[in-house]
Image 1 (cartoon, helix red, strand yellow):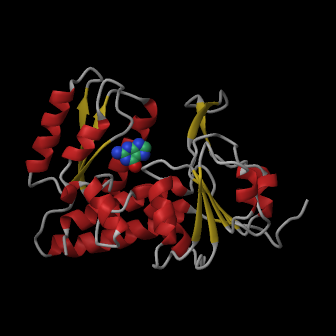
Image 2 (image 1 turned 180 degrees about the horizontal axis):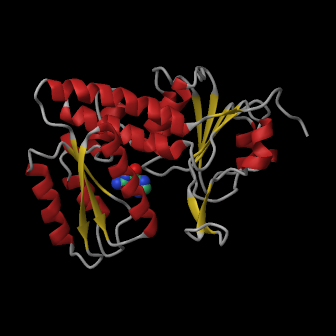
Length: 297
Ligand code: GUN
């Protein structure tokens, strides 16, 4: 089996996210010095899905670590659409809240699209509202979705030049795959890739993957990408964070990425670990968006 030359660069999302947090701490220090209050992020959490609880806890902890204000609005899983919409309208009107997110997924009786459409675009720090997605498509200032944005920051801050690369994105979700494909193809730095977006109906998916200089797996299928799908010397980004049972862990579960790390890493020029790769970068990007919300230009 062919291998790439030298050990792969492990793209440390934790360390890169800490760089971003340090920058935000300093910006916030100057903001407070000028007499302004800290930026404030609110997270709406419906029900008690274990994954969502963990993600929101990380977001709140990250806010505290840079000195931003934050709070969780907890709603019972039996909340009605009308009650949830009332919360959204209240958050839109509250001048003390710069940005907010409604953690997904919502229980199945709730309409996430109606909620998304009602979020004030200037407070939509997730970047999921059509105004922000549309502005992004046109290259206008906007809130960019946190995961794609974090991936580009991770690549950029680790000095990987992706200009001209063939990027293959696995997964077309509106939160990750679709916006990332768009961002990679734009005439920006980082950017200027030639992009192939693969999904569940793609024919010869392995062949597409093998042609990738930059391969991004965002499918939510643990271990999907195996060594035979990766070109030696490729940069591999793993967005997957599926919880799998693991009795050896105190929590009873482990996070598994979409990439079979052990067999793929030796082939790569650079690769993200799970956990500690894309996850911390997503949260760092959310903090950047929250800063932007509190400091409009
Ligand atoms: N669920 C999984 N990822 C996200 C995210 O980035 N934002 C929100 N609101 N929910 C999510």
